[in-house]
Amino acid sequence: MQVITEEQISENLDSEIAFFAVQDVFKSMETQAWNFPVVRESLGFRGALYGFKSGFDPVSGALGLKAGGYWPQNADKGVANHQSSIFLFDPETGQCNALLAGNTITALRTAAASAVSIDRLAMSDSTTLGLVGTGHQSLYQLEAALRVRSFEQVKIWNRSSRDLSKHRALAETFGVACSEANLEDVVRESQVIITITSCMKALFPSDWVNSGTHIAAMGTDTKGKQELDPALCQRAKRFTDEIAQSRTIGEFQHLASDSEILTIGSILQGTATGRTGSDQITVFDGTGVGLQDLACAQAVMKRLGAS
Image (cartoon, rainbow, N blue to C red):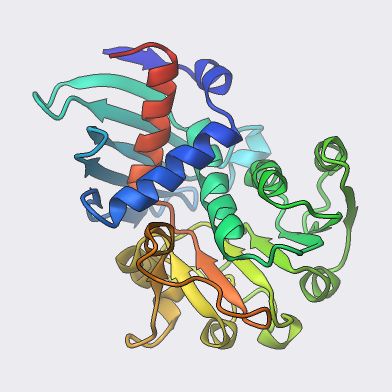
């Protein structure tokens, strides 16, 4: 069994590779691949959430799981709040072929999912990207989004007063201005909004969001999770990575059971229609599925020359 470190992953996986790996697995989920039921529990210790995500893709042969979760007090120790490890198994024998550190993969695959939704659902002439949240995930989200749309500016709501010098430097490499703003201005002035928080109640009211806006809700998913006003989700055309997961631990758990939700995979496969008008609001609920992790892990192993 090979053991792959975070350093090796950083050398062999970037936002572009992750984008195509995640896009391909979203397509595969519409035909043959499937995710197994998620185990997600509160430990009642240090405020931590812990669980397992797993799945199988007969097309690529990806079989495995990710174990890990969210420790909200880690930031005080200089450690990333999200911690995980990924196991890849041989589907022919069930043997474990590789153990990969999961933090960088999780960050890149989450940002890739958001970027796929922006690429397929956001207005092509969107000029302003709004980031709601400044945690570890935010830099990955920023880079992935800037790679799929030619924004003119980025506005960031920095509730935690974090140093945003890395965000500004990254935006500069794409020739994009980057500044802090209050939450209402970020929401009202952005045509694409990415929420990346761990909230249990709506961050902003529905009426702050303008027609034509695309929102990627990418925050921590668990029972009770909520970043968006349900009234906003009702106004919008709704998309997710996996419907069952979105309804149980994602943003759409707060909607009526008969609310229509489409998978991003169905848009990629051409079996459903995405945005249908310039005044339409679209929401993508990125719950994070195990197959995303496995697809990115496989991409790393391929670049490392593993069989």
